[in-house]
Each structure stands twice: as C-alpha cells, then as structure tokens.
Image (cartoon, rainbow, N blue to C red; front, side, top):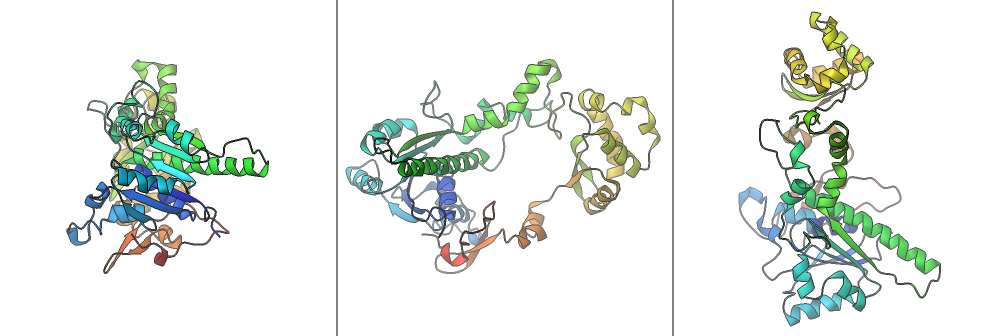
Length: 383
C-alpha cells in the first residue's frame, strides 16, 4: 500500500503549479480528480507534441503532469459546474487550486468560505503573491515571483539587464512546497484522530506564495546586501555573486563545453594550481588571496585560468580533479542528460502510453522510497 493510497484529492486550476502538486500526491498513491474547463487545461495546447503536430490529447507537458488523474470537464462559473465541484468536495480530503483569489472569492472557493462549509477539508491555494497583503489581488505571472523576490536581480551579467529563471521553476517550486505542506497537514490530521480530540477540526488552510518561496531561497542575497552594502554587491554573471566569497566559484568554458569550479578552501586552490602545472602567475601574492580574488578581481583570474581549461575536455578535467583532489563539475547539455548512465541506473525516465498509439518519455520523481509500491508504466495512462 502506498503512503497516500486512501487520500482523495480534487484539483481545480490551470497550467503547472496545482497540477505538479497533485502529481506528486498521486505518485504517493492519492486518488486525484482534476476539474478542467470545458475547453481543457491550457497545458493541453502548450506542447511539446509528438512530431510537432498539435493535439490536445498528446501534449507532453500535460501528460507528464496529469497522468494517472481522472479528468472531469466542468465550467465552475455555472450552477451545473458548481454542483459537480461541490459534489466532489463533499467526499474529498484535499482541495488544491491555483485560480486567482478574486475568482475564488466570487465563486465561494476562498479558504474562509470553504472552511465554513467543509471544516475537515485541507484547502490549498497557490499563487504568486499569496492570499493576503497589498499584492494579493494584483494580476500576476510566474516571472513576478522572480522579480519581487530579488531572484532575477542576481542572474545575468552585471552590465546587462537581469534575467528570469527558465521553464516555470516558480510554478514547480510552488507545487512541491504545496505537496509537502499537504503531507504535514495529513500527519497533523492523523494525530488529532489518534488523540481523540473530537472538538478539533481535521481541516487546514494552506496558502502558498511562489514569491515567498523565492524570497526565502534568495535570502543569502539579502544577507550579502546587509553585510556588504550595495557598493560591494554586484550581479556576477557566471558566478553566484561577487561579494567577498573565496575564489573560485565560477562556470568557465573548456574544450567541449563548460565546467563549474568550486574551490572554496586554500588547499583546493593549491591543488588546482598543481594540476595546472604551477604557472608563474600563481606565485604572485595577488593570486594567493582567495577573498580578494573572489571580491575584487574575479574576472582577471577567470581570464588566466580559461586558456588552460580550453585545452581539455570535461571528462579530462574531471579525471584531473579526481587525481589532484579539487572540486569540479562538468556541465551537461540536455541531450546528454537524457542518456545519462546515472539516471538510467536509477530508472529516472519513464515511458507513458499515449492515447491511440505510441509512447512518450518523461522525467520520473526525485526520490526512491523503500517499502512503497513502484508505480509501473502501465499505471500512468493519461486521462
């Protein structure tokens, strides 16, 4: 039996965040009913599609996020759609939605209204700004989470505009945090039941803000600013930041791609120098102060190291790193990731049957749990 095999979940939303949350719950065995608008979730038209032929039943992203769920088409802004939704809510454990707060309030689907009607329901809302605060009712998109959290400000070259994070990471992070919070709420509910606290509600209200998530994740940047001030805090392109951390902490090109150098301790820097053949410039006092190199002139040191890196492939550099004992990480291109021996060994990728014919390969989950039933490919039919 899987951990959540007796848990019923209703998902009512659109696009990624709510779908990813309930996908994770489904991986643990939860039974998920997905309410889609009559025209279908917008993900159905997002792709990618087999042979690049648009088909709302064969969107790779939709299938990845929604396989194993039961899909119900209903317009929740009509009386009939509301009837369908509340019929499901009356017998479910968890309700997950990422509809805008203003719409939820107009339909009586906000946490306050639902809690009064279903006191034992775990209610989860996902949005950029959350359900409270001066921005709660503002229109928002995924990119806003990176903007208001300061995350975008730290990405990119210092003399160019800040950059966003690709591939809707704020939505995936919101979904993952929501799934974790739901699990905690279910544990809390079980504790109430075991303690025979008959006067205590079994429900919970969970408010997920992707802006909060990225504000917490980028907290280091705030600490750097508070400690060093704006004059010493700069966007640093290929490195995490240029604000006093020891050198090297940087991505640099090599013969067949790029590698990440992460040598934060003096002995690691000395091992890298030895692997490089101890060039004359490394003897200068200027290149012995790791903090000064990291804070004041990292690009200068990059320019000295790069010609050496360009002589070797990623595999050759990794071999040298293992031999000499300095940290290095080869950067993999996506075509290399999908054939990774490590991921193959862990059976990370899955094949899902497409409607009518064929298969699609999708990423698996980020954990291996002993004692849980493995989800077989045949269990992952899209609805």
